[in-house]
Amino acid sequence: MTKAISRRKLITKGLAAAAGVSGLAATGLAMRRHGLIPPDHCGVYGPGETLTYAAQRLLTRHSLAREFPRSMISKRPFANEVAPPSDAFKRLQVNRFADWRLAVDGMVARPLSVSLSDLRALPFRSQITEVACEEGWSYIAEWIGTPLVEVLNEAGLLPQARYLVYFSIESNWWESIDLADALHPQTLLTWGMNDGDLPVPFGGPLRLRVPRQLGYKSVKYIVRLTAADSLKGFGKGLGSASPEAGYAWYAGI
Ligand SMILES: Nc1nc2c(c(=O)[nH]1)N[C@H]1C(S)=C(S)[C@@H](COP(=O)(O)O)O[C@H]1N2
Ligand SMILES: [Mo]
Image (cartoon, rainbow, N blue to C red; front, top):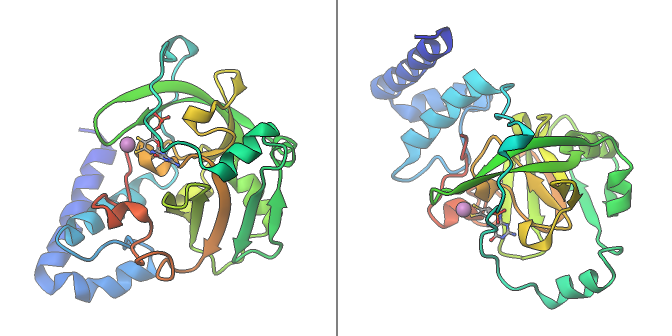
């Protein structure tokens, strides 16, 4: 057994014991202070979600998602079904997305509105990672994009910020991540795939790839990023659209 596994067991057991003895409510304050409570912690799956998130955050804050050799790139990657593009999307597509803008607002010193060419002018990174859907299928591709941290540095994230909320041009798709994922080097504002532009079915022109979490956190057609200190004011206050539909807010893999 590796050190990491035994430590994980220990922490999970410790948290479980604490939860058992005094109830999650009592340990909640200390855990909240250390950023260990996910926004969708309430409800039937609450204690389970909190244990998973807390154990992950204590153990894997800086760990890397697996990267694959070029030979393992999927020959026929599978784009999940997305709703047909809206008129707003089609209008931008006609112009080859020259007028696509990404708004960066909320708890930042300098709110931004950046074009795809602005983004491409920042340092970028290419990585070969897997998209894994919660329904069981997956594929491997090369993703090329600007690390989210570069854009957050441009905007000047304020010290109060704890979450990054991101919105698709499809109004029903929005998600959020904590700063451990937002500042993580593999979290990319992705505009390229397998050596070309990111194709529309895969989220082009702009998709946030969060390779340390399940596919649904990698939202396509990103138009807005908002830094926030709390997720209470967004949707039903559970952190994203996913818990509203029964999926966990934290979907670490
Ligand atoms: N805007 C938007 N983003 C989305 C989705 C979607 O329907 N719309 N589906 C999500 C889900 S459930 C998964 S598993 C992945 C699928 O990625 P793929 O289409 O590249 O296979 O995209 C995610 N991002
Ligand atoms: Mo999915």
